[in-house]
Length: 402
Image 1 (cartoon, rainbow, N blue to C red):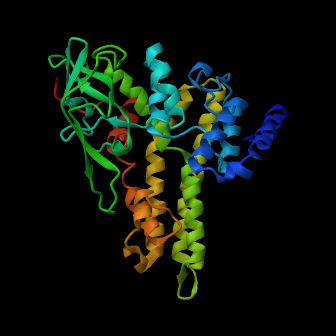
Image 2: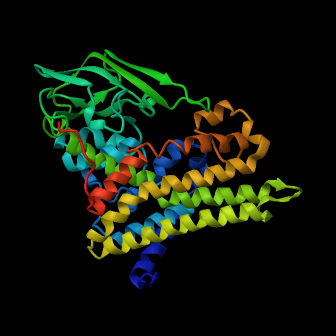
Image 3: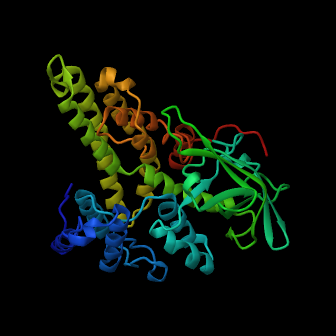
């Protein structure tokens, strides 16, 4: 395997590194709140052609030609520098690419620019109390009356709904159609009268998930993406982007590095835990999974660059499953390293930030949270069915006719 880049692309890497010398910001700019610093640098990255490369300029992106190698170099260098690049929020990471594919011109102009910079936060209204893995059975209703949709029903496990200004969600608009065909994809302002957000307190003490209730909530008829009854097709595109965010191999490598640091600082019988034979074996096994994920990413990258998308799709389907499984292994090993410190209560700041792996209670929160992504974007068991049926051509499970 030849992992060397051409002279042209190494020259491009040099230009990226030169640009990244501007992060962190210096002087008066360094005194700004961190969110403003990141936005300022992100906008400079757009001007340089390194940020939001696939988003047209008229919507706030840098609109660069497709170049898988340049994209890979940018990702490597920005990650190494811990510099702000494309936001991985539900708005920028999931809604924006969906609107670029399915949205109207008016929707793109209205919603994409503020999503790119976190000026308008989004949440995802998919799951319902009786419709989780079988999402197509959802019952939350949207009835068209004049120039408005009237929404009634409930969504659940709605991440960050308490901070969102907008929701993209699935609603049943054609009650007499087969379940997959009767769904539409709607954009809902969170301050709509008749919409109520209630927190769901988590076992770690935090509150990131919510349930959302709609009682005759009215939104404009134009807040539909694609046509009536096409919501299922639109949602498939959003889920692809969600699974890619969850399956990011850089997250595994970063978490594994944090695990190594923890093992070097924790003590077992007066010696660093990393010298303990049992933990060394566990850590070595975990690193094998991390490196396998990175190798799979390289193979996908190579095939995509060559235009061999058929060779990309099957391992891409595995990214989310392998990543979430490995992250659970990392966090469970870290939790075991904590020993008695694993029962320490988190601080309010840690709860607000989903925990940070610089403290014992932060590690505990990350361990608890690591079980969630295996459900997000489609539970692992459902994902394995998709891989078997669509990736390997295995026969579908017997299903009751709609």
